[in-house]
Image (cartoon, rainbow over all chains, first blue to last red):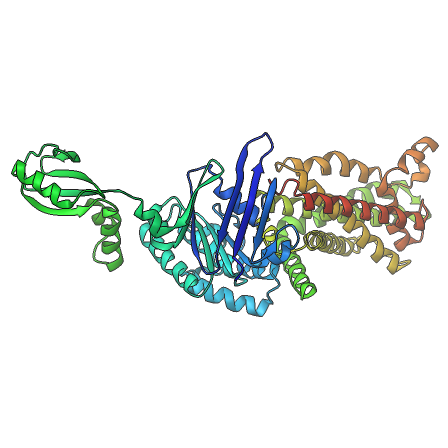
Length: 313
Length: 257
């Protein structure tokens, strides 16, 4: 089976001499949910720009479902749906027109385009806003509009450049669900993001790019297996006055909270042995990551409490 | 398959462009009607009655074709210049660039939009003119051909201007400093045969002279220049400007980094 995307020796040098890509190779298989991660300025958006023909490459080749962008650009383009990082729709046009026009650029008949626009606007909870000018939407709605727009020609590969940047937790999670459904339907998804949790939860394979070079390209499980430190938070009885634990990397947060980093080579038992030595009594213990996010989603999602009370918690 | 896709894409761009200027009709369709009414009142009724005949016609009848053509030129140019630059500025031009839309379809869509506005405004101005003068028609096909080719020429010019423009100021420089002087000196208000020989020669390098005169021939049957030469000038301009626009878009000048 042809790969959804095959990049070979891709380089990009901008006017002025800045080399954004230094000969990257990348293959994304059909049906994959692929993360392209990297710090700001690493070359992620340049890579996406070249794939979607918004940036001219300096050298190398890009093939989308076997169609080389140098020889069969229009065929390659027809497979791709792009959700860019910046809002790039006409702010003065109503949502429905933006979507129907976009479908038209891909040769989708108006009647079918209207049906699809209705489907995606409803799925992405934008139907009520269909006749509003795009500038009237909130940031999260604008992000969803760009996803709907990218799907109007029913692409086989969806590229999302930081689709959840600036989006609140609840909405981010609903977008994750939507993207998972698309992937389950067979759409290959390539995602760039700054939220590592997002990549971890969604993607099966991952490439990390830094200074225009791919420094890691593997499956998510193998990458996570490389993580050798996990941090645990221990809530102790009030006024316990803990001290840093011997033989372990730990930090005293306050008189009843202790954080401990645990290496893969260590057991959690070792922590309790040290805690016992100090005579400290543990009320509860939890993994440090994403505590606030979990709390926020559970409160807001259930409608039991307001955002304010969640934050106060 | 590809031709059907291209046709739908062209229709989409055209619809978008026409809906854009119709949505803001107070900015796009009303001002030319008011401006041209003032021209008719001042140059036609007030001053024109003292000028007498020109080219065998009363002054008001003589300036009508030129004034219509002036509106067509200005509107077809500014429509594409502002619409395409705005699409660049808001980055929604990327909607077309990422889609399998051939460059000629993008050019044809925007130029078609500019022509539609130019010709619609031309029609409105013609209707306004009918309140001031009895419009004569010598050859309707010359009128239609001239207005279509002229609006296409200036729509292409507006597109090239927008491709190079880096700010909104850049799309007003050419209309202000080049188009307006060329139009006023292009025989809208006078026959170039009235000019001294030297200035008659200079006028002949002004392409708008050929457009205005061909258009005037369609209405009144008189022209300072040959009709064949006028169409040849229009043809050369269209082919040249289209080629330039295609090269710029294909290379991605001002569009791709």
